[in-house]
Amino acid sequence: MQGDDRLIFLLGHARHRVYLRLDHALLDRVGVTTAQTGALFFLKNNDGCLLSQMGRGLMLDKSAITGLVDRLEKKAMIERRNDPADRRAIRLYLTRSGRDVAAKALPVVKQLNLAIKEGFPPEEIEIFSRVLKATIERFGGKPRRKS
Image (cartoon, rainbow, N blue to C red; front, side):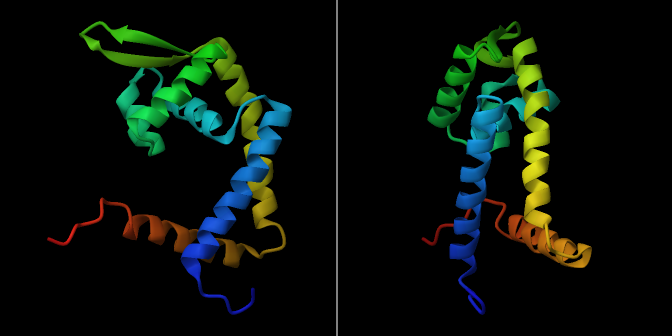
């Protein structure tokens, strides 16, 4: 792939491979998927958030976040509670089991992150990180539609 400048293809392909590897590792070691782990990590920092806030935080639409929450609730890792101030709103909370799984998942994620960096000098990792952050920033908002 030397000299390949199909950056969109390469980003998508790399993401797919990394998430596939991470899914296998997480399922084998802690019994959750990458998406489920992301939700648990989000709740570690935002326990009691609204369902809609988690959806925005994980960049998932309403149906995807609802399905993800359903699966985690069945595994007794999170629980839904009505918001006392607005009974229509649903707040999400980590259970003890969810906290334990998140703690066990973190080393798995860190191990894969180290594997990605393996063989590259710190300067190249810094450049790669800067390119990814700039890409996220550049394409962070909603695309404008031409009328």
